[in-house]
Image 1 (tube, rainbow, N blue to C red):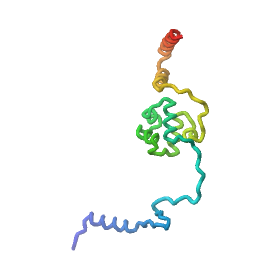
Image 2 (cartoon, rainbow, N blue to C red):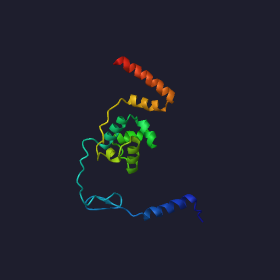
Image 3 (cartoon, rainbow, N blue to C red):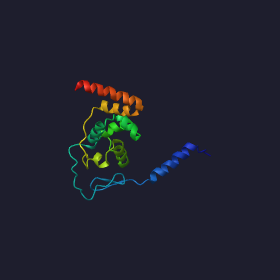
Image 4 (cartoon, rainbow, N blue to C red):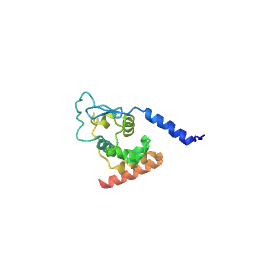
Length: 159
């Protein structure tokens, strides 16, 4: 009498499961049915989204807002590599991520997708300046007033 070990029983069981999996079939057109999506039956007209790709648009908006990739990633709860992949068109963001990006960048999802142009022409500021303005807002009122007096003094000298 041969004792069956757990391993031999497991292999025999998994082989029976493997044999029961339906195999995909190949159509005349060359598409594999059951393994890949079918080609669309209708052809939709292409949308004119301009020369800018989604990734280029996201990078432009992010830079206009003064965010680094790391800051934007923290704001939407992901990592910098994902933002980089979106901007280089290596990954396509899903619908939820488009909404998160739009909220973080304070634009509409249509603006992110290129379906709508910016509502107002935004002045382009230096990113270092925008970061400092954000830090300025975090200072206590007393320190903000002191900095404003110093800036006003420099501006009076320059005029």
